[in-house]
Length: 319
Image (cartoon, rainbow, N blue to C red; front, side, top):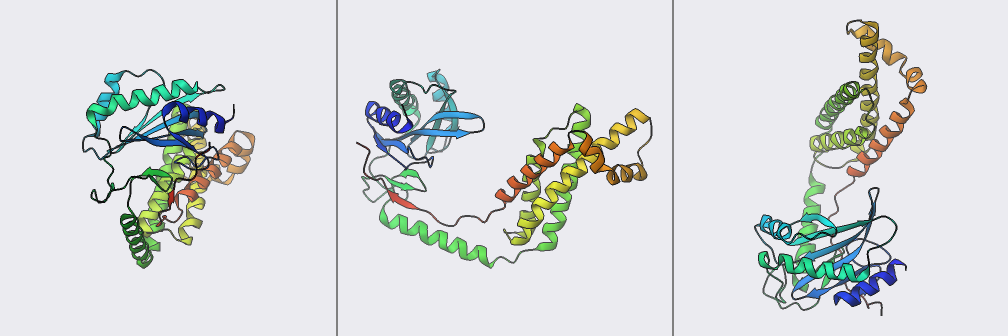
């Protein structure tokens, strides 16, 4: 059974409707979406490197005490799947699977059980706009894929506010020297931590390159104040340099340990000069690859903020 057919069955069993190519997860199979007892429900598929999962999203009116929702879910002791996230107006539940999808009726029953579990701690929507709480809004609208009750005037207000935010962002004068200083500092600290942790574990923790990329990107963007071409160029360069610096620290410590010599600038310089030869004989190539992965992640993180909301009506359901 393909994903479209599967979601059709889930939708029929859960009292929802299937909308191909629409919903929060940007999948061709779309989502099963609808409102039950005032609770907006969306069910679809999500995949990442950790595996595939069926995701159930429940939305309700804002609750200033999301901890009460978490407690209600724990008290319900639901055994299938696990809590993905809780916010002041949503719950996301995830059911991970390997090869065989959960039975459609089990997913539908799970959605019903989750709704009943959170009912004592939440209030359902009452047919009014979520933004202004005054305009009658009977139909769901997708706002950046998220099923939402939002009236036409509030949609225009959101667009206007985002346009103003974009204009203010463009007026920011980037501080390149500050961005460079903070970026170099983050790269130095990240590389030093990479080397010390690798030495302590006697193993180069390759996924640390992604963390370094994140730290460098955050530092450069904080320093410059906005995303610029300068930052998009310097961030991956600093990330790779940080990983190589961390490798140099790691190998320097290894030499100190086995040769019983003290640390010196001369020793570190010798390691740096011969770093490529050392890397090529060990797993340094993997370090470089993960460094590039970290740089790629950093570059992705350094993309320009999106000052635009896409509003889309739910299309014709897949009958």
